[in-house]
Image 1 (cartoon, rainbow, N blue to C red):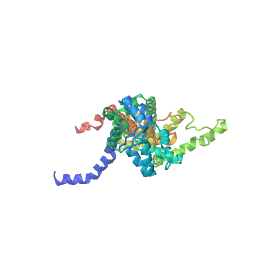
Image 2: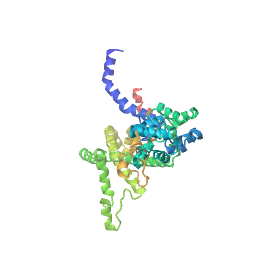
Image 3: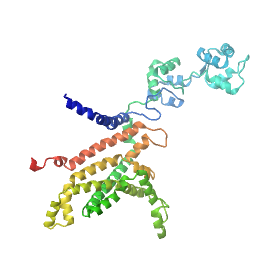
Image 4: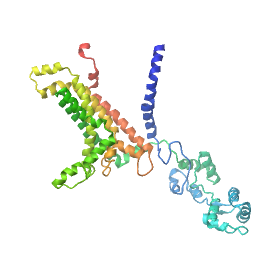
Length: 433
């Protein structure tokens, strides 16, 4: 490797590092997370080992025998050397010695029985009910509800309870509260009815908004193509405002137009139409404004790119068409549009991928309402992994939603390249062959 190559790699290294960190790594992590059950309850750095009383019912289905489950449930309280040491540290050696003399080696099924045993102390009784309850908990030998930071500590605890080795492996696996690798996320995506509703909403959103973006953007570009240069630039600048406005401010403007005390209701009130929230009143209203909100943003970008492409077409072709008697519509149909395949391919592909993964305008406008009727796939992934009312953020399931979008985007890109005959678009002109 010569010096020029090394120098080139040195200059490219920051860009390569940025590509790996901000493009490749997120995709890899999404793929990894999609095959885990990672959530708020499991944590992201590993978990602990814990068996609660509610877990006892599912242990037999996890391969733990009924005898071991009964041992876990009925461990109870016991006066042993280790529990007496804890009691002596809290309530004194004299009380511990007297209790050992009275009940040394005894076991009790519940805390109430243990408290009755503590009442047998005569030389220095525990008179406070609260202290007696606290003292009884020191003799608890059940591991239910206790957290063990490592597997070794958990195995040691269940061994001390007398759990047979045949049940320890299954019990340890069932007690683990951290994340594990699984394909359950994709099974849920296939089985949940809400998944199909999100898919249908996404298809509706992409198709309607994409048609508006490409069609209206191309219409604006063609309309301004024949205008005087200064007039056309002013008109394009006005239509480009939705693209440069902050999304929050832009959606707030639409909400001011559509809320029950907004501009639309104020205009319609004199005609006897009751004020309503036009954006969220029905699903049809919500979809109409979602398409308009996103469509105006997308159409502005399409207008700029299409206008630049139209300006790149030699004017001599238009002059020749005029000489042949072509009117404006014929010039558009037979001269301009055939040479716009590449820009239309780019805008269509870009807007499709953008719409598949974007949800910020829907989040700000309707948040998926009314009644989740406008909840698209990307917004469902956001709600599942980063923001939901249940409190348990399911990172693995949200990543599975996102991974499905990545796969769909790749397939649609390949379809677009095939539909627009990409090879012919990038082929050398015949005069150069």
